[in-house]
Length: 104
Length: 144
Image (cartoon, rainbow over all chains, first blue to last red; front, side, top):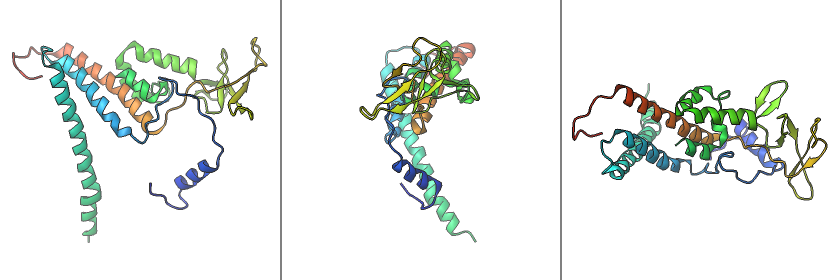
């Protein structure tokens, strides 16, 4: 993580380090959030799967190839999101910088 | 999908008062969304006389019955929070340990994704409603 000396985020982080730790309750499902902050992007997989399951359950005329369609649509969503993320990264960190450096 | 959202972000992701625009989408799930919101507002939030309902802080315990917040202190022996109950109830004056807050407020990505899961569940229900209301008969063999 990039830290900027004197910024409010850095000061807050330093204050949090100095503060005494308050005990947290044991995990209670459906009441407390899960601890997946570092791996939040993995939740794209169940999201794509659940959306595909619901959508295909409504739209397919027969359920003969249901799981095949669900798998295909889930893969399309996941790879589509990865492609969107990569294109946004290229746009912001490469193309925008490229244009800004050549601006008069 | 709605249950997955609750599992990810906890009950805090369904909140009619604090996240009303998101709750509009979640309400499309049906009565379960209103039920979860009612339970969240009336059974898990603390009742502050000056400002109304809010989520309990990590160092607060929700007093049963009144819903008033009770500031907890750490027991030096066990390191667990202890609450001294007040009021006129039969348990008033007694201490409770461990006195955890009723729920942990979800923050950051977990709050965003839990809210998103629950709202997408409502949006998928909307697709079903639109599909049932305005569907045209599909030709045999036409892809879904």
